[in-house]
Image (cartoon, rainbow, N blue to C red; front, side, top):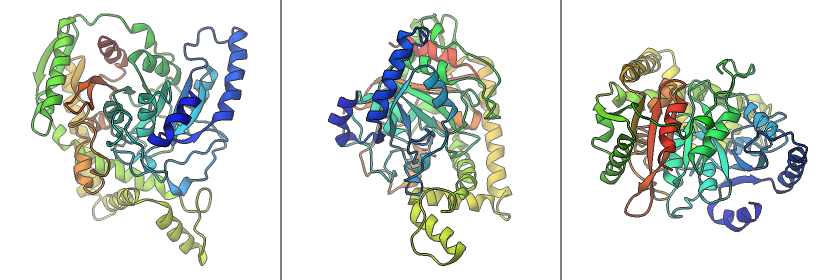
Length: 447
Ligand code: GLN
């Protein structure tokens, strides 16, 4: 694995840090535990994993793809990292990402862009682009990403791999550097459904260090794979197939639906209410939470500090102006604006009301269906350099992913063919709250 990274990563730039020596010594320790019989029931023991660089790793740089944390070394591990280590996982590196997970292309990282291994003229998607690209390029067996508005699913779609965003509260967020706390969730990216299910079995479960994690133990995802889906009801929102979606993607998605129908599921199109407002509601809420979460980077406690300054106000101001990139600044300004006293009701409160409407729409849909099926993204991976000049257009690309975060639902993206340029297409299956087993079961039928 390390050799593969050495051979390929100068081209793709999936990693911010590669932990060669550390990983080798950890692997030796794990081997001893395996030989001692301790890890007999651990399917991923000894398997190298790549971890997104916004997930804290003790003693290992965790940068969030930002200059402002370029030298930050956390003194503790995220809960997901502790859980993986207990099961014998070996972390081989920390992956590249859009700065603070804000973006859809992995082009806003302070550590350079990541290229899509399927076609290096195109972006890998984002923000977990480094993780998805590492898996696609065989630079990692599996990886962790984080998903606030699609950042696991969309890069998985663009790179032709599988990624799952769990139900909010399934996986502890302790040690995940916060972007928008009410939407963030960690999840696995793998080469197939079984790898994702095995990883999710390890990282899920209640954690007393995260009060939003749900008090249920061991969910048992891997063991449901292979069960049939006879009688399962699948709904396709009509709006998900409308204008804005590429014809090729539409065809692939409908072919996938046919396949599930053959396996015994029933398929029906329906109207999903209010989702057309998901993008503005998401960007208002996510930016509001980001502006609050990112106020802690001030050059005093950790991370980058500006060099010349006079007085405290100037340290803050210069550190933040020099340390954050443009997209992050844009989000913080939008966030501060929508939270400001004169505009709070008009924007932030209204976005919360829209979020409630979207949730009602999904609740009604899930009274009838077990799974909602659609595309992960309206187009395949854009060319490098195409997206950043037009952020509004880039935000619109999140149309199919963000409502899942606003409602806290689980969703998986899996490969579903390619377009005429050979770029991967992603199929998204959305489940009920804690309905991961249903979407994993259905996804597994495509393998
Ligand atoms: N593209 C979205 C954003 O920029 C999603 C990011 C994410 O899920 N972290 O906010």
